[in-house]
Image (cartoon, rainbow, N blue to C red; front, side, top):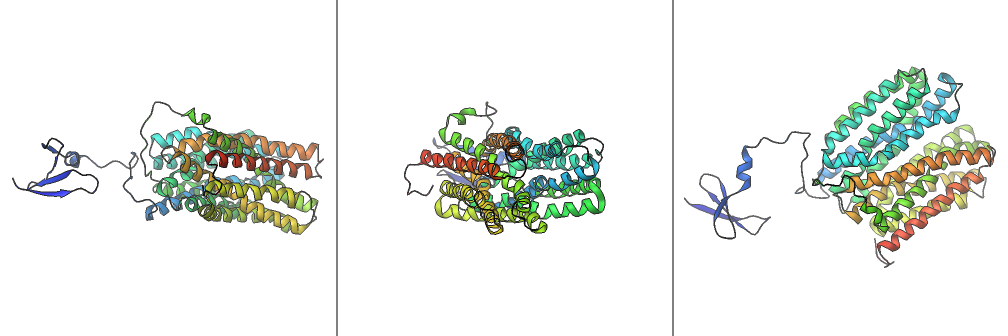
Length: 457
């Protein structure tokens, strides 16, 4: 039997191909053994829901941008629905539940974001143990079905809390965690830009989904608005989930969650910084329009459009801060973003009561606070690798859950009890001080990562 020798680009061993087409490889003792590849030829191809490894696919390649596009669409509808809940809350209070307090109705939107972060650990575990395409597909189905069921729950607020609030957020978590973690597997050089584009989807969703929801509610009512949104989510997410492939296959392990990260000082600084940042993060989004109308006496249309402006600036910031990170380094860029975001609140918003400073603060804060959202997944991937990124991000989002529950209710209580509904300065100081505390925590992270301050890290 004659053979033809060739050298594999992935090994130093010499392969010999026999006339019958089989690949026989010489081992270290010189004996001929049958290659595993010849044995696997008869195996059926893996089914679409089974976990696959694409480790030989190039990083920073074309398919990675397909994953980024899919993730952007997923966040556009998951986080976009969270951002547009204010449209439902206004209608619920005015028409369906006029006897309910606004704070009670606000729990629906609060739970949408809080529970989504609270179940981040289980969502991360599922991403490691199952094919991410299956996880994101199930998440989209849960989100869509929960909104469709909520459309028939117009008789009691507690039913909306269970469906539009909790059930929706459970599905959103199964979408949010993979969409923000998997793109890191496909990129190295362009990782900050890729993650920035993905998380910009939430801002884009808020920009167009809010006016679209307003229009549907005014013309069709909340029932049909919820049904249409649910159907669109199922359709768009089902298509997007097809492309949400894992590049790396994570090996199974005994520990479901590795809490050893809690002994890593770098992770603890990130965890503490995230709690501080999310505690003060939402105050400008929630209170800026009311402040502009009551204190600065801006026109009603311009005051209400401040939400659109801050969302647009945040969307741009999530993409462009990735480019800043390429130049300065990811942690350095995060420290810079948090510093400017805190200064915009404490220097522009707190002492001045003019339309110009309000608009300037809206744009500057919106742009640089977006860096906090987009850069953290990149920093986690760089510090601990991409193999466990889904679980690590899920653990980190527990910090976001704590900050969300502490921030929004505390900010409202300060405005009502200390500011008596008209003095916003205690609330502004509350938000600005927590953003400044986050800046200090991330400064400590920078020192813990490297004490060479000239290093791009």
